[in-house]
Image 1 (cartoon, one colour):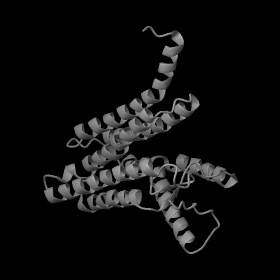
Image 2: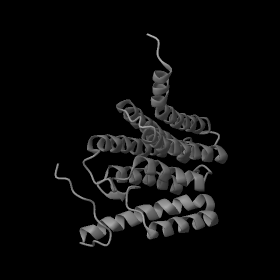
Image 3: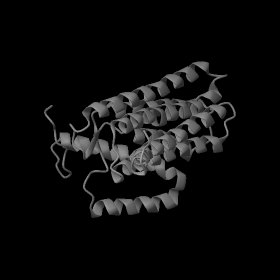
Image 4: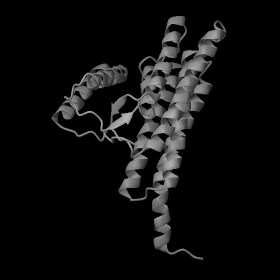
Length: 259
């Protein structure tokens, strides 16, 4: 049966969000290819490029939801595709990047450490997948102002920020152990029940002031700003959760859903 122009337009409109998601997947896959090709070479510029591609994948990941809402083309297919893309872009791709960046240069001298690094990166990937699965089944049953556990996109950006700030590959033991600890700790934060503020939290003058401060720090610190940003993001979130436990209500705590 021949489709009318209106039907073709409707189908094309529904394909828009998925097309943006595919662009996100393309960035994640490109990051994986660059990381693997550069594993033994150790070119800092290529490692930084692989990390920046993950940031770009995050931009497209945010855009696909915006496009779907703007065109009123939300669908179950789009939700599933987005979830699969997130596992690859923000689980597998950063895990592989940090493995190639932090351990492959040490493999010939310290093969056991290389395996430990691979295990730590696998922990990160596993925690990211578990975090996504929990989000999918609990969507609509938690306070939208807060995420339960660190979002996988933030976790990926957190570990990638280290590569952006210090793109030279790890060639000594102490930094390699620090990368191991980073991957395990960020993975643990993703599967934790710690509440992380979301973009749906009410915005006011304080938020605008914080954005202004961040822009100034970005201009001053450049690539290393992102490491400072995520360090403060995690520390402030932990202090906020501790404050709630102790009864502080200066910032509204998350609502608890009985089911």
